[in-house]
Length: 226
Image 1 (cartoon, helix red, strand yellow):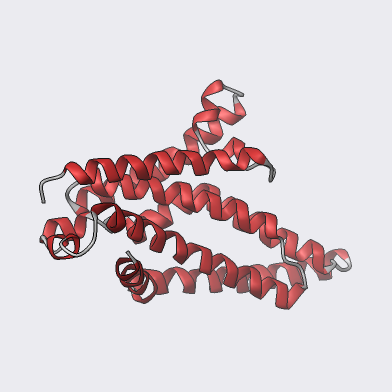
Image 2: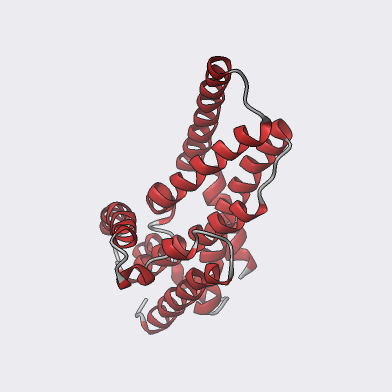
């Protein structure tokens, strides 16, 4: 499993799309810093905690609204690209199918964990504020998103189709989830958003959903004729 994990990590970190997203975060951070500096001049000063809190809110909103879309763009074909090429046969001749799927999933999640740690580390160096709760909730969200992506990458055999489906789900998922929250519908419990409003035991629910999705992906993958 470790070989699959490190191979997928290298693919994630050194692909053009990953570099683009890192560059996008840098540009966004610089732009927000300039905006906050101008705001500080206008209203007479803002303390570091308020600065950092504003960044954390924006990051959380970005994860909720665009997190699935970003993760899907990077990882939508993490499994089906190899099943299409038949290169997966060589890999699973050396490790189990369970290790293969979990290795891919773990690498996809690790990419985002490292991104969050780097972003929050930069905020700490600049503003001396590090919100562990925000790091945990955003990581939980990316675990949830990547579990769905892994499942779709197993169910959908072609990379182009999973890419299109990822765009559809990336738009529909946050819209439907936040809509059910606004309407206070019981359907809100099927989405992760109501569980991450505050950091408590409810935050574990998206992890449970993720385990179900990854478990389903493993079960389907075991039965696939490769």
